[in-house]
Structures are given as C-alpha cells and as structure tokens.
Length: 460
Image (cartoon, rainbow, N blue to C red; front, top):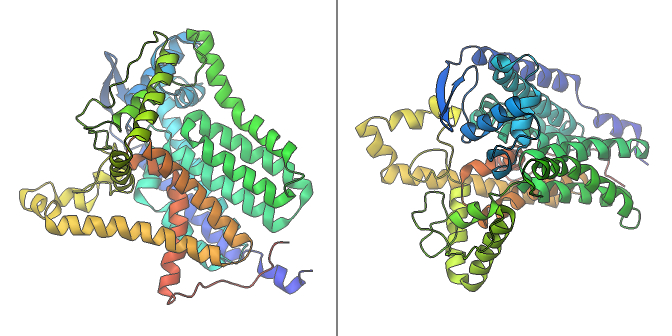
C-alpha cells in the first residue's frame, strides 16, 4: 500500500502546473500574433490560383487546398481525383473548419492547430510531473513547446502538427490513467485515446500501426492478457471509424473501396536499382507490370511488386534502408538535409540557412565543416534517443512504459519509412516522442549519467 506521504510527492507542484500553463498561453498568443502578420501569397494548384493568407503553405499545401476547394464546391462526396489519390482526411478537417466562409478558414486552421499543440504539450508536462520523471518534466516541456520546427508547423497547411499533438495527448492520458489507478475511468480514457488515434489515422493512415500497438500495450498493462480481448476490439473499432468513413466516401464518389491510391507510387519512388531511397531519386523505381485498369488494384500490384523487389534484392535493399534512415533523421537544411521540408517555417529564420545564402557561407555550410556538424547533429540526436530510452528501460514500471510508448511511436514510423521513401518530414509527427527521449538522455548526461528520479509509488 502506498503511504500518504509518498503519494503526495506524486502530485505536481502547483508552480510546475502554473508555469506550464503560462508558457502554453504565451506561446499560443505569440503564434496568434504571427498568424495575423503572415503575408498573403498566391499559390497555383490544378490551374487555379489560391490566395494563401494568415498561414504558411506546407509541403503538400497545393493538394490539400485542391481537395478543400473540391469539397466546398461539390460536398463530401466530391469526385475530384485528389481526394482519393491522397488521404482526404486533412482536406475534410479544413472543410469542417469553414463555417465562417473560405476567407477565414485558413486563419481558423492555424489558430486551432496552435491551440491543440499548446494544450497537448501542457497536458503531457503536467502528467509527467506526477511521475518519478518530475525532474525531467520541465525540460521535456520546454524542448517541445519551443522546438522551432515542431512548434511552427502548427502555422502551416499540413497534418504534421495535429498528429504530433495526438501522440502527446495519448501518452499524457495513459500516464494519467496509470498514476490514478482508477478502473472506473479506464473505459472513458480508452475511448478518448482511441478517438484521437482514429483522427490521426484519418489524416495519415501510416500512423495506424503505432497507435494500435500503443493502445493494445496499455490495455494489456492495465487489464492483463485474459481480460484484454474485448477492450482491444473496442479500441480497434473506434480507431477505424474515421478511416472507414474515407473508404465509404471514396466508394460513393468513385466506386473505389480504398483510403487512398498513392501507396504503391510512393513506395516505388524509394526502390529499384537506380533509387537512392530519397524522393529525389532519378531512377524510375522498380519496373512493375501493372495490368489492372482499376486504380485500387493497380496500386496493390505496385505494392506487391516493390515488396517482392526488396525480398529478391537483399543487398541493394540494405543499402537503401541505410540511406532512408539517414534521410529520415537528416537535418532540416545543410549538406545532409534530405526531404520535403523546404517550406519549413523555421528555415525562414534559421541561422544556418541565412549563412548559406552567401557564397562564402555556402562554402562553409556545404563544405567539410558543415558536413561534420550535420553528422554530429544527426548521430548525436539518435544517440540521445537511444540513451534516453535505455535510462527509462532501466527504471521500474511506469517509466519503462513511458519509454516503450515513445519508442513504439518513433520506431514504427522509422521502419515504415524504410519501405517507402526517406524523408525528414516523416519524423515531424513523432518529434514530441523523440524529444521526450532526448530530454531524458540529455538531463541524465548533465547529471553525470545518474538519472535524477524522484521518489514515488510504483505501479501494481
């Protein structure tokens, strides 16, 4: 039985919670000021000119805007091809946010994304402060809410910020449940996390493996193997509700029972004899024979063709997997940067980007010195992730669970990137989880390798 004195140590210090709240509000207000000072630009997509105002364009902004305009003009069952080529979830979210009209929808989107992000970081910080990781909570909070790339992506058109916030909220709710140990609230928490998972998969289907694994592990920890079956089914059903609506939408609009039809094409960009593993590959991918005229069947044939190529070319596959790993973890700019983050808002003010804009600075950044710094940044970040995870693994109970959840999010998205293309943008949704592990590793290093854990009760 936990003593009252020990249990009180698990309650977050009021100054912690108040400090997190003030920081969250400050960052939100600061972003709103930025939103109303973003200069409008014209963007062309599918022969249409869109005026982008009070938000920055993300990497796939043209596609999302095309889908949104199609939904606005034709309704939920629009037959526009972009809505079944790419997952239609994010354009649908933009469409839902447009009751005040299209003139304010992008402003509303930027504010909502910023609000959700601030709340998610605040929630995780407060819940971490209730655990033996209290001494890490402030560093995790600050590194996450002030991370220039992760924080500023809430001000661009893209699913990355909302999905990153989803991971943070799911982890926070799981910690809250495991600290409270209140079985009466478990179903409510499970419904909430599964609903968040559903929304995340709705926007980006490749996240489905990580969110399902996280919820299943949590259920087993809370209920044990024997009592978990029905709860796992409940979680899966809720998680699949919103993705299923995309399948239904596409079937009604085009007769195709699929979330999207771009998986095979994307996978093929990162495979083949001439591929580098990057979206920049000049080769034509794997020479797949696609006999089906139906886009869904054709996409399935491409997927099978690419997977078969990996199996029959193990040496080339390993080289590509290595390349994709480097690209996935590469810096946002510089000699080793590789991916579709050219519109990263951080690059507007990045010192490295500014230095490289001059001939002398370009030689410095893209020369030997710049390459050395890029590799130190890449390898140092990876080392901190694994070191932070090792620190959490060595602890008992809740801390190990937190580490496992963070690593599941990181590793599954990393592995999925290996069979598609290497792109540093793909790691943005899991940046909150990787920053948590890095913060644990960094703080422990500063303490001479001894993790500064506080006392508190372990889970039963």
